[in-house]
Amino acid sequence: MYSITAEKLTKKFGNFTAVDAITFEVKEGEIFGFLGANGAGKTTAMRILCGLSYPTSGKASVAGFDVYKQQEDIKKNIGYMSQKFSLYENLTVSENIEFYGGVYGLRMREIRPKTKNILQKLGLDSEANKLVSSLPLGWKQKLAFSTAIFHEPRIVFLDEPTSGVDPVTRRQFWEMIYEAASRGITVFVTTHYMDEAEYCNRISLMVDGRIDALDAPKKLKAEHNAQSMDEVFYALARKAKRSD
Amino acid sequence: MRILLFILRKEFIQIFRDRMMLPMLLLMPLMQLLILPFAADMDVRHLKIIIVDNDHSPVSKSLISKFTASDLFEIYAISGSYNEALKLIETDKADIILQIPHGFERNLIREGSEKVAITADAINGVKAGLGTSYLNAIIQNFNQDIALEWSNATSLTPPQDVRYSFWYNPYLRYKNFIVPAILVLLVTVISGFVSALNIVSEKEKGTIEQINVTPIKKWEFIIGKVLPFWLIGIFDFSLGLLIMYYVYGIQIVGSLSTLYLFAIVYITGILGFGLLISTVSHTQQQSMFVAFFFIMIFILMSGMFTNVESMPPWAHTISSLIPVTHFMHAVRAIVLKGSVFLDLWVDMVYILCFDVVAIAAAVINYHKTV
Image 1 (spheres, rainbow over the protein chains, first blue to last red):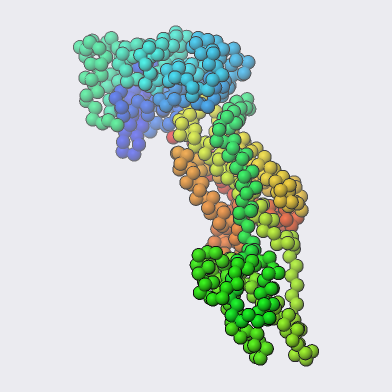
Image 2: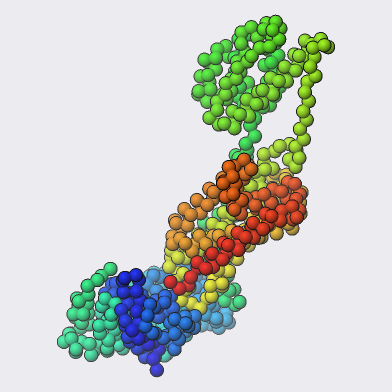
């Protein structure tokens, strides 16, 4: 079964084709890396899949729902963590979780024990009543991820979740991603870190709005005679004509 | 419904936790209502007058004594020369000069008439205009006095007698006029523009993107954002009515429920307008500028300080399209005159039209999807 399918998905802004007929599938429970240089069209594609923006042409479905007609159904079944930090700085840790849990239709009596559980796992139980603004960035990101999957979505979209985070926290963050995937949540993640790309089951690489490569990291390395994903990325991204 | 409760809970926590928001919503109205009516007092009293008396006669003395008796004027100096007096005007020490010519008494007796000269600092036109007309009145009064004193029965022209009666504001207290206006302005700023800032700040911080990927419905988000400010607007309006009564002693002559009906309908529309501003601006700065622009128009064109009827026709038309004009008119009429709903239904229709247009435009303009 596929969580996400896209067929010739295209988004144009005037004459500019941000996403150029991309076709791919993401399997259920997979960690799918969505790579590309700045301005390659990753965020635009991701926004369409999250129901934030309509495609110009092509077909796509997320969790079995159509991106044209069933955006609100998509939204009930996904979690999303944006590039920008997305929790409320002037709410406490538990108030943030309660709010996002609540808007996905959970009841307070379901939210309370689960929040406790999650904060314990994150080692944040003593910070539950502190304002989010007082937390260091790494903790905020981990908290944002926990919040994004709090309602047990079928798919979680992560837009550069680890940018600006130290290597130790990044490691811990990926452990959380694996844990979520093992529970059956499909993970769709964009990143600029090539070592993170190696953690993914499969990756796609976008260049100038098109997907130029799509496979498991091992196979891509073999295909390009490369030692690391870095080299694969250079080999492909060098062809790019546009940048931001 | 449950989702809406979660949204409202979050909004209220944020409003009451914001260090700027609470003072803005509670302290600002108090300060404005307690201070501004004193500052925005356009009554002209205690004008500083300089009298240049070149005559030094009993008649000129008795004219001068007319001014000492009035609280409209305060004699700043009795000067010997016009130039000296003019200097005092130039240095802003006095407002108006009355020049009594040499031979004032003699000419008055011999020829039955004489002229005095008035010179007024007209930088503030209202002050100069009112000042000279007060002066005229005093001189008229003086004329009558000497006419009576010197007359023989035959030449006496009966003094004209005009009586004024000022209705609804018998002592012509400017505060009765301005306090309701400031209350209206206050409710407008708080419910309309503070709510706009609140929504735009979510755009600025990027949290709105997160909201847009959740299943929160458009109406849930809008109600969640608007309802707290709607309640705060009503609260501030009530607070203002209390201040109006206890501090300024202005009794509400008309019905309180009619007043609240207008307030509720008006605040709803102005919240819709705030929402519209927030949909077209991306940063708080932008929405501030837009809000500032409209506040200026609202103040100057709504008849808050000026007379709408004396505007040129085109301005009059604009004024009648502004909801503030109608709410202001209704509030003043209910508070001071005791007008009933039937007197004010036209204002209600205008406000309702504004509500429909503003809310429709805002809802259409607010997209969860780009």
